[in-house]
Image (cartoon, rainbow over all chains, first blue to last red; front, side):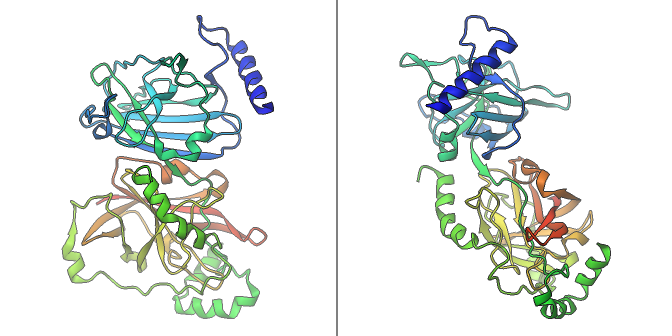
Length: 228
Length: 194
């Protein structure tokens, strides 16, 4: 409860700073600065062959188009940072939602409601369409189902709990079911721990063994030490 | 199991449990793989038509004598990348979904000496990287090498989805922090389909 109250307060204050919207809920979907830390990261390879319509029937999107969707999440503060690149997608965008670029909840091969609506990618000047920034929830999509917005009650922790049950896509006037679509997959965060220091001369107890291995390796360790 | 990706994650759970022991303690000494140039038969099978999404089973980098089988890797409980439990073998990130990138991870050293990617720093643009998938060998060409701080690791430049058929090889570099028992940097080699 405390956390929800804090989030609502932050969102309300932020919305107040950027001005009031035109008759929409002003405390939602706030563009925010990038947070210092994230709790998870996801990527999606979006292609036209993954698109299905609302009935779950395969409905290929724009031939030859691709999309890379990179997401960084801080589920403690309900912030999602997005970096979206579309290649070969032809606007105009079209969707009954507030924007036409979304994260939906749905397994591969199935339809599902949008949970987050992102600003549509725009011409990046290099032949691609780009959209990047950070949004803070609570999220709305502009799509109503059973009397409430499909973003109502959604939290980013649900993506972290089961990323494969979410997909991301973008819709255009020619490909209303989706020009490209891809399921989310989690990626590792931070550096990769691929070393234990045995060639740095910092492991005295193992020095003799290290020397033996170094000789066997053709002196490469000695070369490395010289470089550093 | 809700879809293909869930299947991968489920399969990786036992692997993750093994790898959480870390990349240093209790690991048998690594011996750099012997330089073994591809056989004539394998060279004959090199093809430009291999499916980049077929699971890779081995990697060869002839210029630095690497010839290693590949173990599947996932994401550790702390959110970082799992790394090979055997310092003499490289691994591939199996959670990439439908991305066309093949991400290969290997240790630069163990506690006792050089490991499988010890000489990765020596590769140069133009060097060949061969990835064995099933009965085919996909050939890639090194484009560039970069050394990056682990504190500013370019997650999506390495693990992010792409439509391009590329290989990204990662090991450790920089100074070794004895307290943290960790190198400060990562070395990333980018290779494209040749």
